[in-house]
Image (cartoon, rainbow, N blue to C red; front, top):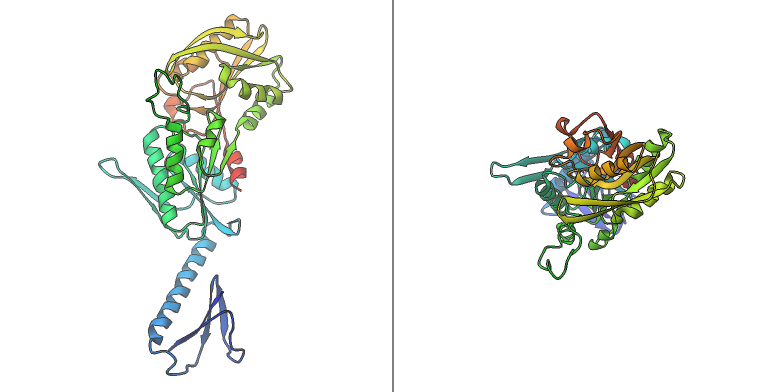
Length: 385
């Protein structure tokens, strides 16, 4: 039921249930669940505590007025599912968050204070009310992985304690996604299933929903106990390739696990032929290319992967394709992790272009002439909106 308050300069009378006297004249204001009406006269003796009640109503009006003015002069009347929309960015990829904000019509992301203390602890504070709002928190868990993950958890917790209506964690890049299975249960049964652990942490922190972009293994979405929207960046990448009007294209999967991803890209490129590189991985970040399944002679080969970390696998694959007679070799991936010797390997001349997206920010030291960066801001904007 709606709460109705008759407010005057000297007393306030409370009425519940939406029933009010038609004989009283004054101005009504809608404050959501509370209606407040001002009168210029009073009836003495209604409440002994009339001054405190009047003060509370005045404070309610002033607070609501401040919030309305901040909303109207700040980001505009953005509504999502009947609630106001708030978009906050962690420190992981501020530029992408600002692009997404502009795509959905906001001038910038909403205000949030983020800082680190001298001992490395992270501090997060929301600088405005989010009560009853649909909040989107954009934060990739890229390097520094643990710092960005902890910051995301604190952002979620801060919004939950501030009584947000719904909290959606938007992770353009989901770190720890590769630790999604026990590779050898007999020899390594004591290793952590980190992807499941991180998903539990996000859920327990208070997130109601998660948005991911090209997670390493799509089945890992099942680790979450909350709804997951898995967005694919392949339309952004395929559109760029299609505009280049390349001839005799063969799409190449860098390993057996990437066949489904490569097949989807090949289908989008007018059912281009598919090839597969057979490799063996003896340890983390170390892979050995053995042979090629398929024909790339005198053709344009496009290697498709979800991420490039050290660049060893994809560079060795490109060398194999050159040996097999490929005319051109392109690399295409969603997440440019680019750790260790990746830049040196990718810029060695084996690729015509290395096409990536901006799910992970790249500083000047990680850029090279063959690099092409595409934006996933429209993709995330459409997913959010």
